[in-house]
Amino acid sequence: MSGMVSDLTVIEASMKKAAGSGYSTATDLADWLGRELGLPFREAHHVTGRAVALAESKKVDLSKLTLEDMQSIHPQITEAVFGFLTVDKSVKSRQSFGGTAPQEVRRQIKYWKKRLIKA
Image (cartoon, rainbow, N blue to C red; front, side):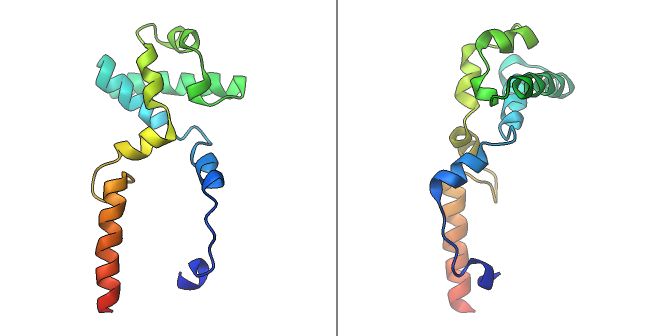
């Protein structure tokens, strides 16, 4: 692993673009549907699948669908959903151990720096 990353150059813009590709916020949509609209997981999953299919057919990201598009899939969806369909919001929402939230990443960096110094 060290050989693979020793000369790694991170290109932030490319990383952000890649993180947002492939409908990576679909899980966030399903979570929002369950949390905000009270949909059972199976229904939230189905609605999300339809939203992804619509976005694919229009060749856009989920966040680029219109409110009318979203409401054609499920009429209770509100404008508030768009605040949850960004990569930044998605990353920050993963706050469990090992998650992608910045405070979790910092915690892991601190842990591994200490551990590697001992090694």
